[in-house]
Length: 64
Image (tube, rainbow, N blue to C red; front, side):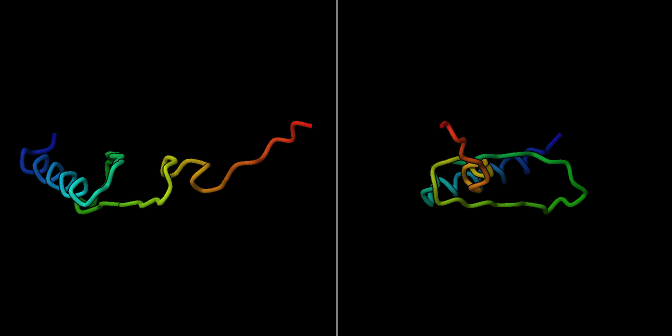
């Protein structure tokens, strides 16, 4: 279970992002052996980060 200090650090990080104007934040907790592991992904569009649409990884269906 995370310590209160860790929770305060996460809240401060999220507060900083919103103060910078970030309007959408997704947080995923992953167990890792590295305590300092943080991965930040930035996306310029409004679709979900990592979705097939954000990666242009989808196929057009021929309706004809």
